[in-house]
Length: 75
Image (cartoon, rainbow, N blue to C red; front, top):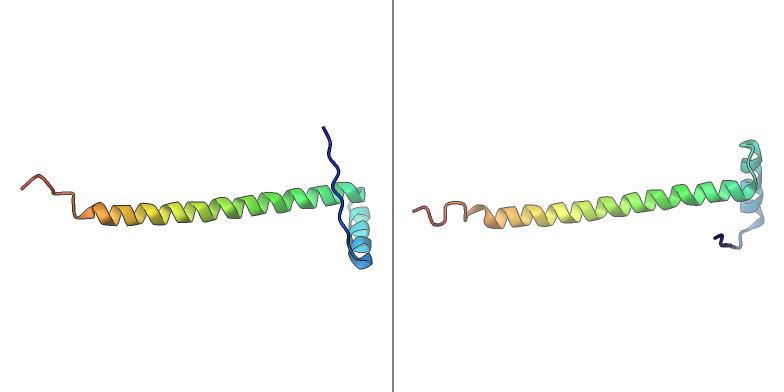
């Protein structure tokens, strides 16, 4: 199943996009599709990295909180 996306852009942006697509031997739609795919992957990677840092911080906080309990029950 295919979907259609459309957006408005200024003439300068549209012309630059057409020119770059032509230089690369691509249709404008293929060039835009690839650019959006790359952006989506980058944003998702940044989001995963942020979540990883957040989880690591929680993990460190839990380890710090539990650190003093390692000898509990052995005295």
